[in-house]
Length: 281
Image (cartoon, rainbow, N blue to C red):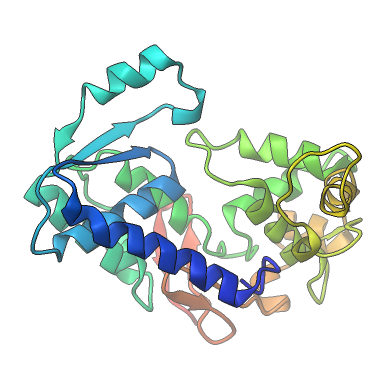
């Protein structure tokens, strides 16, 4: 909540409301779970299936998965997809619980082991979790995959935040990164001890969700100011792309991936080419 500039009590209330909705599932004879193939949806799916795995009553639980984005489907496509709903199996529950336990563990070792094996019961899960591992710092540069893509996008010169977001967003086959979490990645590059990019007018925590209105309200104006800002590589950014500047080490990053806290002394890394987890030195 702090990173995104959100009130802690408000975030906690939102999760409490969500959990309350889950608890009333016993009042229904059928519960359909609709999820896409991308990382964010797959993480929500395994959390929910882990929840249901520990519920004594879960009659009528069905899963509907798509490798296309639900919000882009027309009425006919949604109807056809609904016809493919299948009862959630014991294997799916077990697989989800194993994956959720691995993702929330204090080290990424179990997660790295999990993605080595196919998961036919949940076919989109392993690719999604591999994408999660790619957000660990790389061995030489200390950059996550998203951070590296941001810097490479800026090699040819300054671009607006909105343009960089659009370009980087499309680089994922299963697109998952929304605008505000992406802006948070920019913060980590721009406001580090040794900045890798420059040009942001303020931190993304000042950007809040808004409803478009006429005239534009203060939240929309702030958002547009951030999104239209021109950003560029610094010397450190160029050096990181060449492997001569270690962002994770030099800037002492401190962030979380699932249950793993990445910080000095516990800087887990992931070699994306070799698909190999590297323990902290």
